[in-house]
Length: 220
Ligand SMILES: Cc1cc2nc3c(=O)[nH]c(=O)nc-3n(C[C@H](O)[C@H](O)[C@H](O)COP(=O)(O)OP(=O)(O)OC[C@H]3O[C@@H](n4cnc5c(N)ncnc54)[C@H](O)[C@@H]3O)c2cc1C
Image (tube, rainbow, N blue to C red; front, top):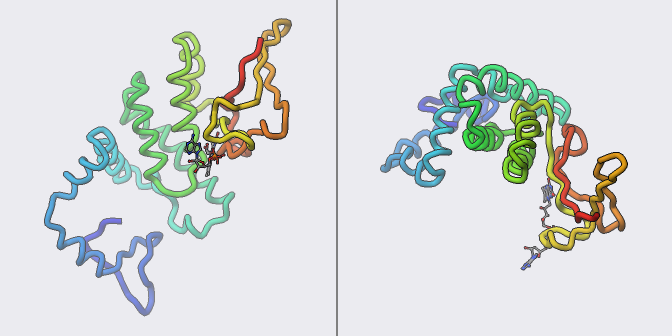
């Protein structure tokens, strides 16, 4: 947290991110910086991400409720998730339409990725905003995009990413889960033929996700 003043009181308060109190030593050291910090940020992040950071900061000034609630780090897991949904709902209701070209998937992706990583906390939408949205954009036909990408962006569905299996991580070619099209019902039947094929690690799947991108071996 950048700040030019400090409420530091070593006897009473100590430094605190939650209370927005910065240690005076940090303020002093930051003031010694001899180069343009914004140029370094651009160099490290790239122009697009840097622009979104600037937009995000303006957004936070206009809608302070977009930040995590003070005391977030002391909350229970359930309270943290509730706080995240409060923040994300507000973001989508007011800030998202105000800032972004709704027809630009690239803009949506860049901003959502930056947003989910930059706001702190345990973000239940990280997989939705990164892996799921990217798959919906890259692996779908134009016809599918109209339905699924749209629902992904307006968050009427929440996605996760189920690639890794308990027996197969980096070696994606060895995945064992199968997907077979049932011609009678026109539905995909997903099957785990061995214990090794059990999907493992899929973030958000347990509680938040309504949909998943499932990596499987296609069989006819
Ligand atoms: C916090 C967390 C969240 C995750 N979330 C998800 C998720 O949402 N969805 C999902 O599908 N997966 C998820 N994963 C799984 C993650 O993607 C896998 O852990 C990853 O694919 C690696 O697989 P593995 O752990 O089985 O390691 P392995 O594939 O068994 O690799 C073990 C070691 O061998 C090395 N190695 C592997 N192959 C080679 C090679 N060909 N040449 C040289 N070295 C090699 C690796 O670098 C690694 O050091 C998550 C993992 C973590 C830790």
